[in-house]
Image 1: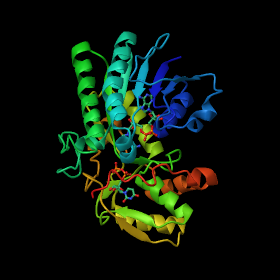
Image 2: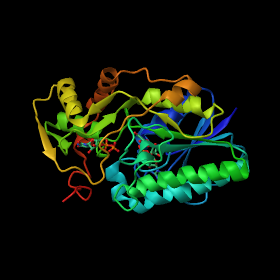
Image 3: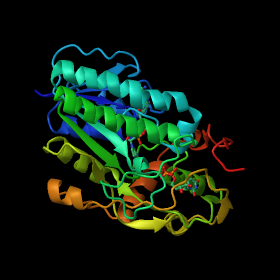
Image 4: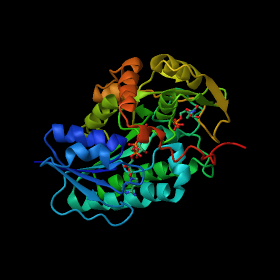
Length: 328
Ligand code: NAD
Ligand code: UDP
């Protein structure tokens, strides 16, 4: 049985990846320190004979007994609010954490895939974003801690590949959503859905003309799975190219949820990218992959998930009054 280590396993993407690898017959070692994750996301896996969980911070030396065939490094704060709140941990998990895991990959002769992001393109001047675009990142801005950690992560991964001959893969993930996102992580989908459920107005940042392109989690997991088993070493965009402005998206959410609340406008966060849309020609060509789930379908499943949360979960919102990211 092939063994795979998934870091960030108690998070949104890590838990869905754990499900997929269990389903495909792998032995999964899930690792997480719960800094932004939730044990609830992997509760259903804990009794599975092919799943083991290790609570560990990957910025410290990572020790795994026995052989390892694959490593998927998904540990990292992933929402703008999270990485503003824990900037040093964000830098460390992308740099020191990645270094530790590459060392482990080298020792075990394992193939390693890293979760990179569309944020490596920063506030992009090329649209849609192709993998050969180098990006437009403000290194010292509040998002720099995440963007630069991810850029460093890509660099060190390629260096281990070139210098040590490690088998590596790099996925550049564009905004992905679905069940198990944290309701209060500040990302736009949980934010709008939580507001609709609590009977609050929907907060659009700026004038809402900035765009995003949302990918349903099952499509994302399929793309990552195919990339891992492909022989392509350089970064690959995985995301859904259907682009929408945040204002239009808020209106879609109002219709979907049936809320009687309205849109209110708040200041735009510093360095908030004005447009984002993946060019997925490369993924189509080399992985024969493209997203299958339409936004309406994916949003409905996601809203059903948020509706199923308890009152306590719905009102627990540690980030509510957190405004350090907003332009004054
Ligand atoms: P998430 O916050 O739900 O999951 C991240 C997990 O990593 C959490 O469970 C957290 O506790 C864990 N973690 C963080 N630091 C750790 C450390 N030092 N040691 C061990 N565990 C640690 O976020 P997500 O949306 O599932 O994102 C997962 C990965 O995908 C991240 O690397 C993120 O940068 C990347 N990504 C996600 C998206 C998206 O739209 N969801 C987009 C681009 C990139
Ligand atoms: N956004 C918003 N209202 C919110 C939360 C987010 O208008 O309550 C906007 C945010 O400014 C950004 C977009 O929605 O333009 C997507 O934000 P998110 O935090 O989900 O991810 P990002 O793509 O910026 O990393």
